[in-house]
Image 1 (cartoon, rainbow, N blue to C red):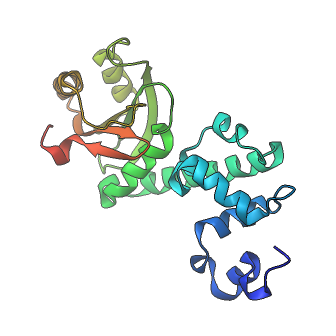
Image 2: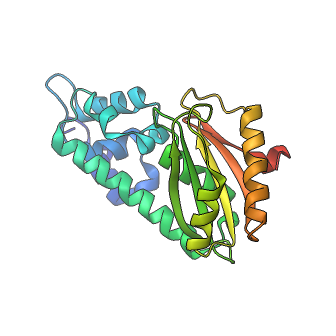
Length: 222
């Protein structure tokens, strides 16, 4: 880093031109601060992003994934995990203060960050108030949907306990294939009918993967 002209060093570049002027690699290099023997910090940052599939992959990375990357010791991993947790909390706060569909893309990003990179399948529910603001997002069930039952009564009970007016359903496909199965569609209709009995609307159901999120509503499946 010291071999670079001052104007090209990430820290100096950010202070003079603003963070938007920096590439993803340069921003990550600022967090990492140091590289490895024979591998500068910019090269290490590039390697981390390549290994994780870019910045979006980094934001969704689990601690175990970070520990497998040479050059990310406990201190660097702790800092990265802290930054990612701050990002999650900031997004949660924003979704709790405004209607979620003010920014549909934020909902997708939020779900991808929470469950998109998990190696096992989970079924989560975003519980919303009467203004469609986030009350809580909770993992309700774990395991593949074909092997772990999703109990509608448990979702109904939790919606009533939180005084939710509507929900957004979500589950991940660790395979990365976002196409919903017939079982996904049947489950959605079952939950929709069950929740309707207590006047709770199902606004959407997302299938989430590392590469994106598919909306049932946008597909006309809801």
